[in-house]
Length: 418
Image (cartoon, rainbow, N blue to C red; front, side, top):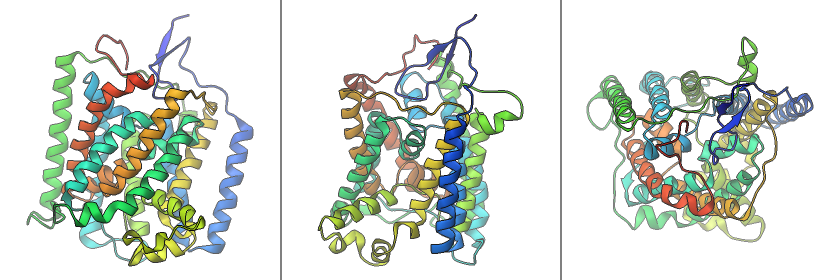
């Protein structure tokens, strides 16, 4: 029987060889358990919170399901383009962003929302804080084995070491929240720049410019691929026919469209785009407060944020989305028969600790992560989203030299698959 290279669940490893690319049988006990947990959480949210939280749980579940079934990565996409020039995953980002700006433009321009509240995109300042934070995040996600969304869906998929990454992601976010005033108030920064409202282009002109930029990036990746003769991406284990919808895998470009639509639905549901890491700062601050640390006195938790700190974590929409992503990825992995706790060792634990701290701290400085700053920022026509992407790529380039120190692989030009 022919040997097939497939992408592993653990993206820190090279493609693995199998005799086929078929999925395992569904893990029905896990699926039933996941559905029961989801039902209990849904009922709890319906009883204790407003309808928005229940809807966001469903959206989060769909986000997690999509991320896992497509192995839709930001970390691996940046690593492939920077190491061997394979830009397929990065082109899927451009598709996602193109669909997102097409949906976000009318929503932001006319204030469309499901519940009559206001809507606002993620538009943040450009300064030292952003530059340092995005660069740190780029390093961190390559050492930690996943970005913000990648950490959540990897935890849902059973990658044991990602629990370590998540823990220190939370620690880093909490420390970053405490230090944030120094970075934003004491160091230079420009006012937020929106391609739509700060330039006179309007949302129509900003949309046209955005599409042109995405097309340019996609074209550049094709040129780089051809010049470097980049190895191909290994396929993801999959099934066939209609069952592929539920058991995977999904094409990257299909997932890109679905993620953009779900982000637009998030915007119209809660009035802000999809985000991840603000919840980590909240979780960490809640724990610190439990142990007697006066986090309420921090500048980060003043003003509107004070009410968030005082309320239940289930009242926080980002927390609910994150729980949904983890649960959705868990169900997707079980549906594909892929849920399995992975082995840990000293090197990958050390990488996860450092990576988690860098991502958590960097995300607070950079006003978001690969989701809030890169995806949400660019979809909101914010200049800071583009700068975040460039600096995260720079951090990725440096991390390519650090990963082998922790036993983490880096694609090579001589590889057949990456």
